[in-house]
Amino acid sequence: MSLNERDKKHLWHPLTQHKLHPDAIAITKANGCILTDENGNEYIDAIASWYTCMYGHCNPYITNKVMGQMQQLDQVVFSGFTHEPAIKLSEELIKILPDNQNKIFFSDNGSTAVEIGIKMALQYHFNSDDKKDTLIAFEDGFHGDTFGAMSVSGLSVYNGPFEDFFLTVKRIPVPNGKNHDVILKNLQSLASKNKVAGFVYEPLVQGAAAMKMHDVEGLNMILKFCKDQNIITVADEVMTGFGKTGKHFASLHLESQPDIICLSKALTGGLLPMALTTCSQKIYAAFYSDDIGKGLFHGHTYSANPLACTAALASIELLQSENIQRNITRIIKSHEAFNKRIKIHPKVKETRQTGVIFALDLNVEMERYGNLRDQLFKFFMENGVFLRPLGNTIYIQAPYLITEEQLEKVYRVIEESLSIV
Ligand SMILES: *Cc1c(COP(=O)(O)O)cnc(C)c1O
Image 1 (cartoon, helix red, strand yellow):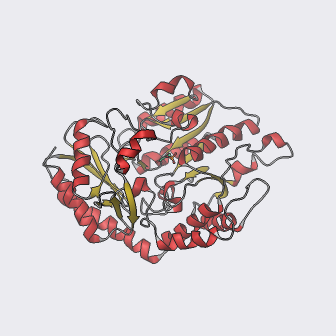
Image 2 (tube, rainbow, N blue to C red):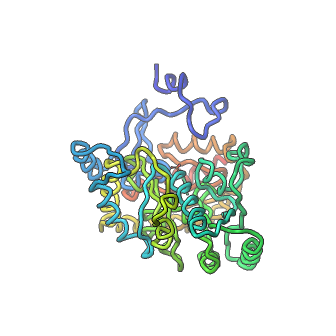
């Protein structure tokens, strides 16, 4: 029996309506930018397996470091204990994070990183004897699938069944360069009528909202407003972190630095699950007390797993290497050249790019997981490229080590796909 057939017996996949989508493609091998399935077909991983494997799959530099660590220290409780991989990672990260970040808290996925960011923001005010109960977030944001993260995400069929159990969240429009006044009025009214604890946002690019991109000035204005009102800013850089926007973090493109930053996805180069919530000294200071109850009583069993820390350290080293930085610049230029030829195609409504993230919207109406979208996905896979359209948006976020030849193939297959829609 094939893996695909055996899969159907006991497995329940994420984000899947199994009655409509019974088949999963069984992948048996991954190397560099190439995924190989059980029938030997090869695919260019043009979305770096959900933006994680940015240094290529099974990167030997990362895997060798982790193999060494495996023989030294595998796992230990991180409450009351510490270890060098976590310490070293904190030292290296602080060097590249926005200047105001000073403390690092571990967890194991993007949703919990956001959950912790929200708890830090709420408890910051609670500990300061100024309890606040409302959060602000963008319309169409996506922050994960746990309850706090779902609450601050935009409403959709995915979190709809749980809406009655959400935190109190007020949503504001995404800054598009034309709505600054509307947003500012909105914020002023929200801040005067509610006790706003924090603002949770994906800086510059909203991944799950089909790579929606922000007007930088508009976001600067919102962040300034929050700072002035002591609204804690929580930057969800789970997707944008580690080079995607051309800088190490999207927040580095902005004027005001966030109080809290959430990181995961490319943190470990895709090798192991891990996440971080980092914060400024101002946030940490509100928890530092003789009163035990003012501590942050949140912890996960695998917090700061030494193997994941080692993978993250190796990834951060690679990120800062001349080779990866050169590749990032190259990909940005290639996307710009591709944009020139694709944006004039009659089937293309709009294109956009931030760093190595490139997206195009088709002129064709499509449901997010509808039939036409499925045909498009099938076309890409049959032509050896793993792209995962979100409704009528096709986007590329390939590993930094993708070759020019592989990238050209991705572009070509996208161009060819326009004739089937
Ligand atoms: C993927 C993602 C999350 C959720 O991370 P998980 O590891 O899937 O829980 C949160 N925020 C953003 C911006 C993401 O892209």
